[in-house]
Length: 415
Length: 134
Image (cartoon, rainbow over all chains, first blue to last red; front, side):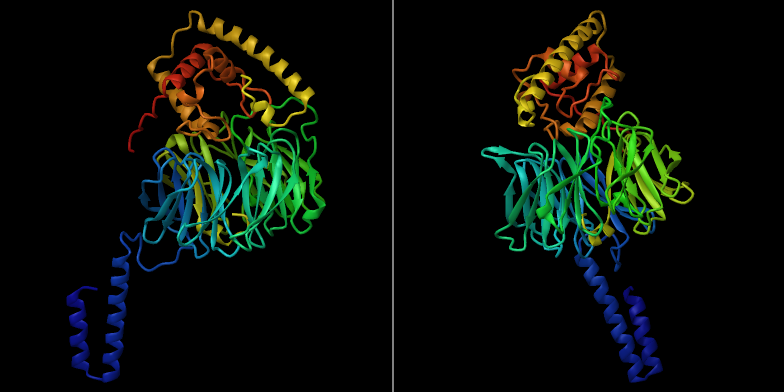
């Protein structure tokens, strides 16, 4: 509202007289001015007064930048630079949905203010990092690191260091940490690639975290916690099978599921490690990438028995259920990474094969799943698909895009 | 390529011996292939070099990092590769490293191309070319 408009309103009020009217108008004007002042203080705001529930970020891995996006408007709101080495970058979201914490390969941890469109804080917390997660109460952000191997907890507001758990599985031997997921009870579950173990750390007392260790199997490469937070699963690279830990009854130890799913056959080469996360569960079944086989493995989550296998176009990397569970979308490792396949979970079969561009690295569903955003690194674009028709709704230019992270993750266990 | 990495993965002794044997056999066969491919095979041209740079930084980079500082796989910087014979590195690129997550890339690379990649890695790998519109 400019000055002339304000003056016009005041004069109109004066003409009409009426104290009540005048006060109402004055307070409206003041509220308007206050909003302008607040927005002005926020630096480079990406928008005026608005919520964050439909915001997200797209990682631009090779240029150390991210775009802030709006998945209602299917548009980019701006770019933030200066985030360092974003190969394999991962992000978790603050409880209020305003901040994204981006974990870079170089150990950088950057807190982005999605509303102000700027970096709020940034630290270098490790030599080589792989991702992170946020605690149940939203107060701790925890990074999982390759170098030095272990996890580190930071104050979610200030990024001040709070606690550290070194992944020292034998005297002087440290493991790379993979698959970190927050679990109920201020806990974090994760797997140790070099040690073949699952660890669960309780941060109820952040100054004195308590860790329990469980034998898991050879070379766990990633992990997930089921949507309710009860089970933690670690996929194994070094053998055919998945390690399953019941977090309600951890004393029972790790149980193996899908044991020997390769049936002793030679593995196909894996040119990119698959990823796991809680999106794998749809309608009572878990859809998991086989390792060294071009298959998606289907497991009944009530008894953890294999109930099916679905042949797909390559080594699956992300196997992601649409939020309603009716579809599962799959992307692939090099050299089949120009394709995305869609599985209908009722039919248990691939119903569509899409070509979103070269080097499809990631997919992210909108919170209720009517659309999915797909990044194609080597074609510098993100394509938004209607999941029902599989028609492209929008194409957004992006520099070598990789991970896409929407703020709806803030409300999900294990993200 | 016995830098103790296999040992750290905690294989049983018998398994390790078998793996080392298989690994040696693979290395020698791949070396033979590399030697054949290398003999007379020209160095990759400029267009192919750009593809190889992108492949190494982006696809190899998913385990080794875009900046080749390491990830699930080891760092591929000149310092980290010093003291390792080029032939063994070429063999690892083409044939993979059994017992680790490193696959063989011989489906996608000739011996001469693998040799060029190793040479560049040991020297300090070229940066990604910027694409139009960046």
